[in-house]
Image (cartoon, rainbow, N blue to C red; front, side, top):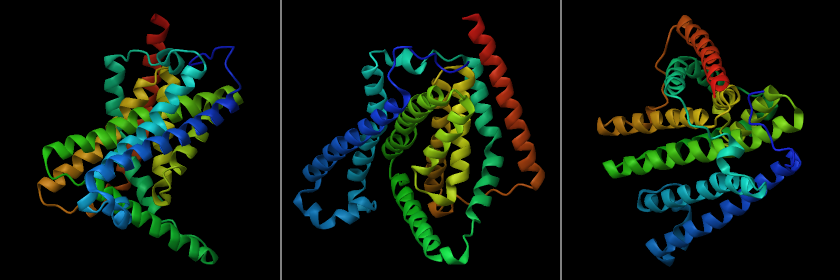
Length: 308
């Protein structure tokens, strides 16, 4: 009852999903090519011989990689969501429920994100201890190699040599993904799946699984899936996508700010994911408080919607 009410004349929800995928592939391809064209203008044709250095975030080509990352994210996530709304001949605001957020609910979102940090740390620790059966050793080695490569790329992208770099990182890692991924996944995929199955909880968790899987980081799959589910419930309870966007921004901005702080204090970024380490009851208390806060958020936003 809390999802955006779909227009009865909307196309089949599974077709909506196919359109989102199609728009995402075309948008990512076109904007990725634009990013590459800009890189060739910046670095010349010698880039052809150093293509791998660009993609792995070598310091010499870091600015170019950030341009590609920003443009690809816009093309892959933001534009497809807008294109789907236009395909349905609806305004983006009404299609995705981009209703003006309330201050109290925004404060609750902030508190939820802070309160959930210890519990999310526990899920990350548990996930990182994952061991596959012996006959899957080859797959496990490949997963760890992918994880290490993704971690190194993330560290390179988070490198900030100036305050301007920090602002760019905040825009690239926090602002663009918060808007784009929430439009694509919660606004697009979750919304369509809910129409398809008629069950918001199935839609939320399926979307969260897809959201986590698409990052292709196996040793962070569980916490990212739970984050996605959390964003999904914020959207479901409130009917406004803004709360999921803000929560996503807070999560990513924290990582950017923490990395910038560490660099300012000459601390290695490869220790950024080191757990703080809470006693077992700290993780339990975090989980209980987080669930309670979600209930408060639900009650508050439902009450606000009745008053609208």
